[in-house]
Amino acid sequence: NMQSVAISLEDFKNKSIRVMQTGTLPDVEESQKYNSLISKADSSYMQQNYQEAERYFTHAFDFKNYVRGQHLYNAACVASLAGHKDAAFWFLEERMKAEPEWYSLNIETDKDLLPIHDDVRWNEIMNAMHERQTRKEANYDIPLRNQLLEIAKDDQAIRQEWRMTSRQQPQDTAKIDSIFSVMATIDSVNQQKIFKILDSRG
Image (cartoon, rainbow, N blue to C red; front, side, top):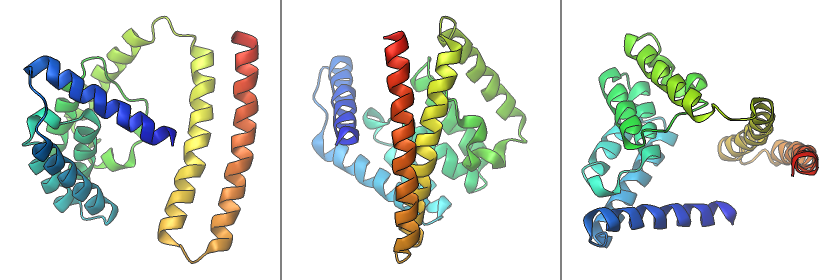
């Protein structure tokens, strides 16, 4: 599917960058170890074992050539949920260092990071995020951007509900089917919105 293709392309890009930077091909065994630890971290997160997830992320990051920004962000989330504020902010800062232009539109509403909102360092992170966003979006068509973000939000919200219900209540097929039906309706509406945007803006 398209997500798998996107992930494969991202992996290829990351490997290509490492080859250009180091002049050597990535070590397959180390790459496998890294991915295995990340997978274990994700599984621990899903089981709400946040301290264990943080340990797996930390061990994975020993393989420095394979660290990805999204994994640093996820590590910040589990550290926050585990009550480890210093670690959470360290991971967030490393995430920002990894990509100097990166910012997140959803970080302020990410429930995983709520436990660290009362720390003064949170405001520093937010200020840096807003500065990056302002620079990046200086020439954006803001109304169009907001419309597209709203479409994406609707798209992901129903899918998240469907995934969560499928995972937590797999026996409730009626509810799962009902959510899937709503998802199909939202997809149809969003498709029409996208077509309208393309027709009017090209």
